[in-house]
Length: 156
Ligand SMILES: CC(C)(COP(=O)(O)OP(=O)(O)OC[C@H]1O[C@@H](n2cnc3c(N)ncnc32)[C@H](O)[C@@H]1OP(=O)(O)O)[C@@H](O)C(=O)NCCC(=O)NCCS
Image (cartoon, rainbow, N blue to C red):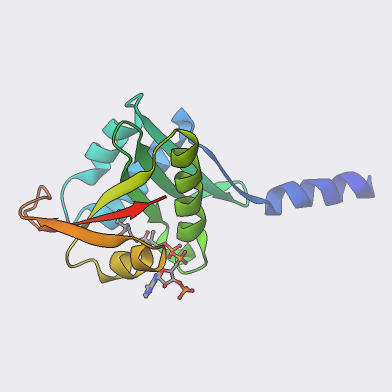
């Protein structure tokens, strides 16, 4: 019995990244609303991307609960979104998700990743800069609420 209890505890404490399931949709919707709604109605937009068959979504699980996600559009190598629950940020979870997406993209034959991030999103710039992304352009009025975006990219 003692062994089983320890085993159960180990499972509860495990952290891992897995492909998203349809049950993750409400988590994705809520987190997207929390962190992206200043740019537009992303609690509606991102769940629509989630069901696109050309989009791969991965989930970071901690203690059996999703705490972050990342989305890749496989046709262009664009990272559509990456987000971590605010209380779990700055613990390496975003980096683990990004690394996972990079590995998946590479396995799919992609050799360059691309993404848009708001010019005012300093945390995202620092995050992607540390991961080796560089700015390759800008786009005015990119977001539904009108903010401009930086286009950033990384070769693999
Ligand atoms: C961007 C985001 C996904 C980063 O996730 P995270 O789990 O906090 O990131 P990590 O802990 O892996 O950080 C990696 C590095 O990014 C940089 N970074 C991350 N958060 C930072 C912050 N608040 N201030 C300064 N640098 C930061 C640091 O260089 C950090 O390395 P360090 O902790 O060794 O100094 C997270 O902040 C988030 O969900 N933001 C809201 C959504 C968003 O803006 N997404 C990006 C646009 S799609």
